[in-house]
Length: 367
Ligand SMILES: Nc1ncnc2c1ncn2[C@@H]1O[C@H](COP(=O)(O)OP(=O)(O)OP(=O)(O)O)[C@@H](O)[C@H]1O
Image (cartoon, rainbow, N blue to C red):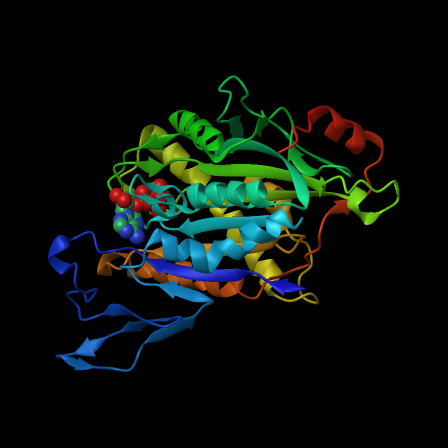
C-alpha cells in the first residue's frame, strides 16, 4: 500500500504591483513555510495566529521553478514507470491557477510532460539491461466526449475494459516512438487540436481535460542464455498518464455564456465527480461503499490512479489573490482528502507468451 503524493503550488500574483507579497487588502494572505501553507489574517496591522493551516508532501511557493516541481514531485514516478509500475501525475485547481503552466510549461521553462519525456528517453537510451518499446497517445475529454488529439477524425471514443489491457480507450491512435524529439513534435501537433478559449479569468483557458499517455514495454536484453524459462523473458508493461485538468470555475467570475457556459458546466460536473471519488476513497476502507468511478469519463480513465495499481502524484495549483480565497480553500480541502488515499502498487510483469509475445515480436524496434 502506498499513499498518493500530494503537493500544492502557489502561482505568482497576477498584479505586478503586489508581486513581492501575497498579502491582500483585507489583511489576509497565504504564507508558505516548508511543506505547510496557512491563511493568516491581521487586525489593524497586528498579525493573528493562522486561521487555517494545511500540510502536504510539498508546498511550492510562487518563485518555485518547474524544474524543482519535476524533481521533487514527479521524477521518482517517471523512474518507477521504467521499472514496470504504472504512474500518474495530474494538476488540479481553479481556472487560471497554473495547471497548464505546470504540466506544459513555456519555451524557456518546460513543464512536467516535457521533462518526463526527456528523462524517459535518456534513461532508456542508457539502459544496458533492458530493451524498450514506447507508445504514446494524447486525448482530451471535451464536453464529456473523448477526442483523439493525434487524429481529429477520432471523436467520441468509448472506454472499454479487458483483462489484458485494463481500462482503455478504443480507437485511440498510438504512435510507436523512438526519441524525445519525436514525442515532443507529436505533442506540439496534438496541442493544436486541443480546446482552449478565452474567459474573464484566463486569456487561454483549457476547456477540456487532457491526458498524455505513454505505454512502456520492456524486456531483458538477450543474455545469450538458452534457458527459456529465465526471468529475463518476463515482459513489463506500464502506463504513464500525465493529466492537465480543466479548471473548476465560478460561472459568474469567468463571465461564461453560450459555448463557454456549456463547457463550464461539463467541466464542473466531471470535477465534482472527481471530488466525490476522492471523498469516498479518503473515507477509509470500511466506510467507503460504492466508488462512483463510472459517473464521469475522467474518473473512469483515472480509476487505476485513484485507489488502484499506480503510483500517483497530484499537484494542486492555487491563486494567491484575495478574490480567490474561497476557491483556494476548496482546492486545499480537495488536496487534504487526496492525501489520505492509498494505492496498491505492483510491477506489471508478464511471461512473454501468447498474444502479448506476438504483439511485441511484431512491434518491437530494438533500442
Ligand atoms: N508558477 C507560475 N509562474 C509563472 N507564471 C505562471 C505560473 N503559473 C501560472 N502562470 C501564468 O498564469 C496564467 C494562467 O496559468 P495557466 O493557463 O497555466 O492556468 P490554468 O490553471 O491551466 O487555467 P485554466 O484552468 O483556465 O486552463 C498563464 O499566463 C501562466 O503563464
